[in-house]
Image (cartoon, rainbow over all chains, first blue to last red):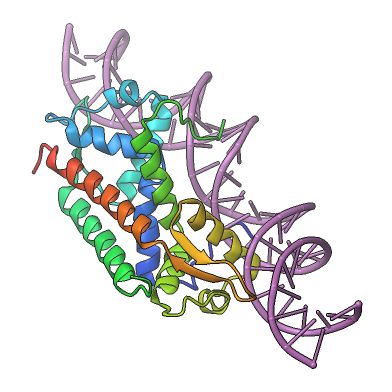
Length: 109
Length: 109
DNA sequence: AAGTAATATTGCAATATTACGATTAAGGGA
DNA sequence: TCCCTTAATCGTAATATTGCAATATTACTT
């Protein structure tokens, strides 16, 4: 036991959970806000900004990246992380669709 | 280590993470859909519907309830779980506000 | 080629989550 | 009162997550 049973859930439910997991940690909420807010998409300062160690930030970035929410020019000394706006908005759609569908089907509305 | 460092994050970031955690498991995504879809808000069948054991479902319900997303008449033999629509929509607002703010501040839009 | 700065990876410890069997508590009905 | 049904709680095992020190990698610079 301990591992999530995936076989019993629909693809949509699993996808929702995967995206939600990105935001299920305050550090990642913070990191995404910061990445989006920087005009020049400067990285590295995330470590100073958020207040966690470099390896930990790198780990969180991987989680966000695995969900497809990052887009960056990974060349040069300074890696440039940017928000993948298309994917991000696609995810926002998914959330809103789920939220609206859930509320709409509710009995006590 | 292993525990999330809360002191370094803002209250908004922590709140976002807490709500996101509710949807960070496909079983809870499924449970919320089911609870909302039932006119009579019948419980118990969640166990049959989702396909996890009764204690596991009960545990997931606690997580959802801790976030304030449930509202129910907990009297009688059959406990009646309902969606707390007000809180749910409030949470939807929080997500949308965060999403919109993040995208709006983005450099590569 | 050697040095340097920036980020990723590895390894590990601490804690959290997921899942379920067994048990317990709370009501309703005989 | 005594069962029966329903759901919460306890205990525990398996797995995942979080965090960091140490190390490796990458790419620019000199």
